[in-house]
Image 1 (cartoon, rainbow, N blue to C red):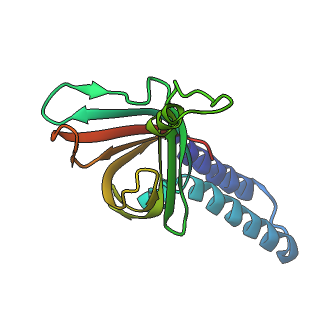
Image 2 (cartoon, rainbow, N blue to C red):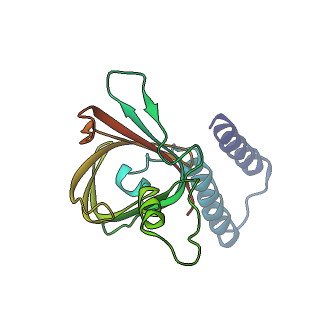
Length: 193
């Protein structure tokens, strides 16, 4: 910003020196020069202004590639990566307020010929998929699931933070029906587009 201010100052000084040392031209030449110089100076000064902060609601819009997924037990140091250290998947937020995500475990294997019920159960166990609507409230996203592989619908609230091209989303605590413990889910993504 200091560099832009110096540049604007130099342009202004150069403009003043040019006018002081130049013979007085006729009106037909002076007016276009003054107009062009004024436009150039306004452009340089505009560049020196800080950019407005991006609206959080629009910053989350896009396609995000999953980089990590962890379930953390509230009040303890217990953390599990149910889809492994390198899960795959995407999360999409549209401008119109729709969202969709799908996560797959790194250990997921393709089905061979004649899959068994155990094979199909393993495929189901190694994925998470849901779609619905969302709204942004400050640094929170309220996701209203309408369809889900787990056949659970309802609202889930996430705190989110975007740093560069990285999106981190952390759920509010939710009760684990299998253990009764309170858990938060932390997912990180890289912007894909």
